[in-house]
Amino acid sequence: QDIRLYFGVRDERDLYLEDHFNRLCTHHTNLAFIPVLSEPSGTTERRTGYLHHALATDIGDLDGCKAYLAGPPPMVEAATALLMERGMRREDVHADAFYTEADKAGLEETP
Image (cartoon, rainbow, N blue to C red; front, side, top):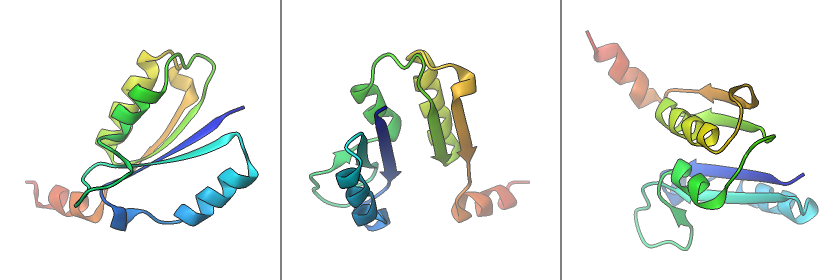
């Protein structure tokens, strides 16, 4: 079964373990590693934009597929909505939303 690993980050400097994932792709031909930069600081050859927009471009019907998401709550929510629109059942979307340190600081400042 095909596996697509979308790795959404803001900029090139935020990518890590890229060599590791590329090696995995070499050994597992059913694996695709797709970095997506949401806020590139310069020109890039990589995919750009929000992760869920890349998903929308790449995928069609997802009935019978599973998704594992981790990231900031807005990304997880947007990706979950898209996946369900494309036919994925809610019980097949597994998500772990997390807050960045900046998000946590902002929440602490809110009265």
